[in-house]
Length: 72
Image (cartoon, rainbow, N blue to C red; front, side):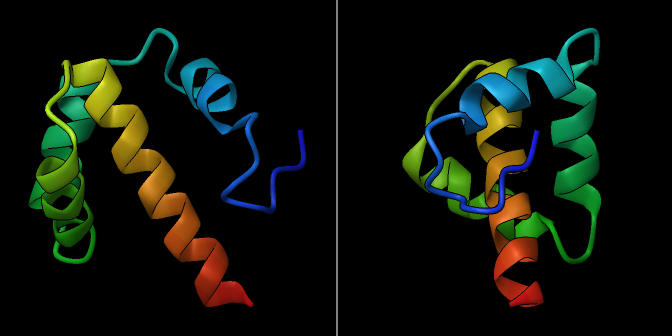
């Protein structure tokens, strides 16, 4: 699935598939401890009060959007 546009409405579904079977709390903890991605976690926390899986999806979407922006 090619998702180059962060505004693509298919992102939530794609991210749920990517995180299926994963431990969302572990991903959130990893991102929180990462020197670069910790700021994305902080940004998401300001706007979202969510369960671990919802937080993981929002954080991953934010990281992917930043990576896509950097590659342009």
